[in-house]
Length: 353
Image 1 (cartoon, rainbow, N blue to C red):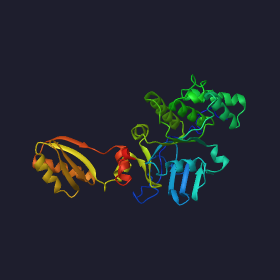
Image 2: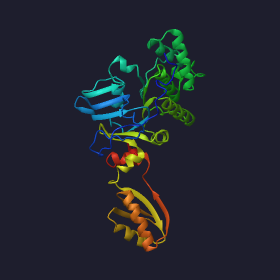
Image 3: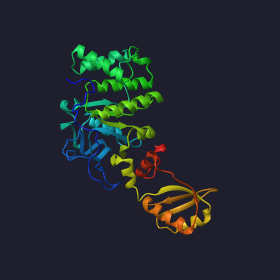
Image 4: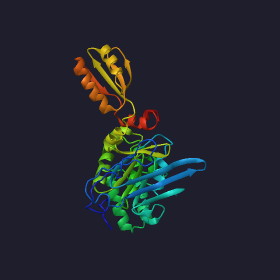
């Protein structure tokens, strides 16, 4: 039996997602090759969705999702109702798909063999509130089938790992939201799973706790774990990983690094704020460019809506040199994860989700 958090295979590297680039918007499977080495494609994915759909009566939870994950951290983002929680529950083997297959390390996700590879932290929690944190985690370890001594050892190691060792004797009923999140994570780590499914794990945690959690997630990834982290805290998720799976209307709209996703958005407008010593002349010149969809003016700046950012910036450089216009300010307004998500959700801002 490996020690808690011992890498299942010390030879494996922290790898990203694999697949080939697909068209955006209409594709349910958009993944990208982001790994090196000839063995990358040969390695079996830890989590694999193949054309998976799930209905709740007449309502579609997820629709024709194809996704594969290997060791590393992937952020799962999307507004409420996009299908994130359904995808996580299917991966955890808590429900069966109506169509398609979900496998964990080659096993059907519904099977006991698959569940041995999975640690799951749901967004909502239901504890035995009268227990202490230590009693709860120890009980979960015993329910995993460990003998008492082994269960106690794993309980103590995981409590220390999530920074709850000195607070675990308090009753759960008196825990803060952040402490409850840590206890959920401790029970998910008890059996040293290869795959961790974390639904909003940063919610309710104080800034210091968030930093500690982010460091822990990175360490788990370095040890060969595969983490799928659902979050509305997009800024925090962006600090944790640039690898994201974006869900919209029950489908995977895109998977890859933020840079790769941005490359797929060349047909979507990018907003740029520009200031120069000749704003009126510059605005007129910009409107002549094919890639400019509009220019707004205020007292000091121009806000340009441009398609195909690479081509626009090339044309802008040529324009200011030819017209001898001095640019005093140049700033893109929507490079964050929020705005990438907004584009993919059909123009909605993720802040409004």
